[in-house]
Image 1 (cartoon, rainbow, N blue to C red):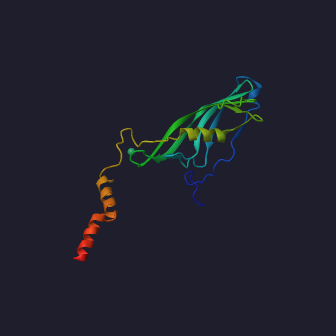
Image 2: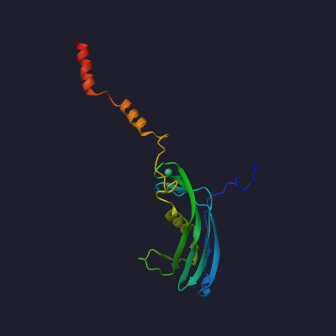
Length: 181
Ligand SMILES: [Zn+2]
């Protein structure tokens, strides 16, 4: 590959992005800021998906009793189609991250993740946040009124349907009469 600009540089999905919080947990209230720059495999919901660019953001890991909290955000870029006019639409917005990792996390509380070997898997965390952040029913603009009538004339569609419809049986019967006469 001769071209080496960053845009042409093909990046593989980040397979591992774990952080060890053992050091941090030696003192309660200790904090560390972790930049996020993760290329996820494409995530998709009904009407939108993530872009081919890395997800960037920043989280602060803070030591608490029996674990850490992770708070911050990712900057989520997405693409999809407008739910009314079906034109392509894209956007970018911050998605908040607020997780608690604890040793001996109560199994019935979804918000608290079991902390195993003082390791936090940032990929799972970012993937979950990205999935939640993808818009389910995006709009190209708030007042989108739907398909452009000039481009998608509804009459034409009906006419098309009519032309494909089998002939009315009553006309067929007339045709039979004609044949007999
Ligand atoms: Zn639209």
